[in-house]
Length: 82
Length: 82
Image (cartoon, rainbow over all chains, first blue to last red):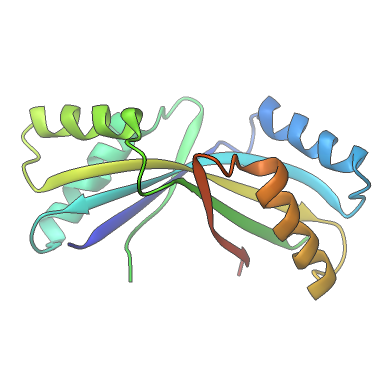
């Protein structure tokens, strides 16, 4: 069955404390090249049937309204998985 | 600065209760086509300098040891962002 991948990331203007803590932990391990880490979400949505343009439009709405919090997050990508 | 994207998903054999709850919520809204949702993580790692094969190998280790819990999660992708 086809899958639709929705990717959600914290807005660029926000601090993402969990990402910052991860970056600091990696730097303590000696990873000087790593300057920043941001942590977002990846949804794999399994579809029964064909992924029509109408369904993708619907998933677009669902991604904004249900899968993400648009005060603090951006939906950065919606695509059909290969 | 280049970014490396690491994607982590719950193992296929595990239930992913948050994903199941999301799928049920979407089905209640009338999304009969959506049969399953799985929720993973997406890390954006900003690199100061060039992404060398050695650094990618190192990030591969970090992804397995720090960014994911290999009892319940799989690192499904590590790639340099376009």
